[in-house]
Image 1: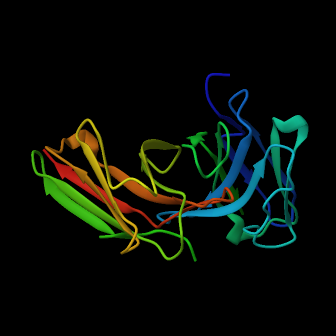
Image 2: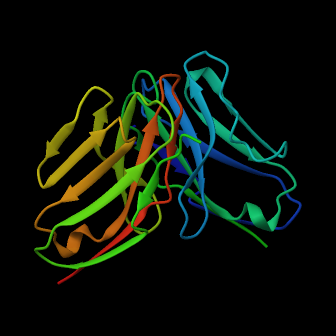
Length: 115
Length: 110
């Protein structure tokens, strides 16, 4: 695609339910990042995928959070047993080549609201 | 933490004035990047400066990097109302992680 695509753009869920957020990076981009942004705050790093290497999961806030990247392309961020504090915008970004050395292209994000 | 920290948190200026935002970080970096965000959604890349560079220009943007002080600044010259946005610095490391600061909210009054 022309850019990074995230779906859904908005998700409302009840506390305790599981949610899956999807990210379609730019074709050919080997690096993929997930960030979380609470209202009026900066971006909190969650996880980073680089090619076939083991992902850097150091930013995942708890074991309720997990992510996978299938075939080096599409990524899914899963939040189990959602809590109200999980409400935020979840942003995905991809980059060509080695992540951290190249600029990132961001999707428009998924606004998650946990009631 | 490698995370960049921006200063000031908020900046309010008149159209035509220059806007300067600063970013400090704590560890060795591969590069430092600046991004802009409108309306709390996707970020747009503005400029990337590598650790062996001291200054870069792009249109009305000028970025400086001082690795001895572990700091960078973003200057927007002749600001316009359309420059109103949040601006973030991001620190890139040699092992790939890119971490963002809390951002500076810039308001340019017509």
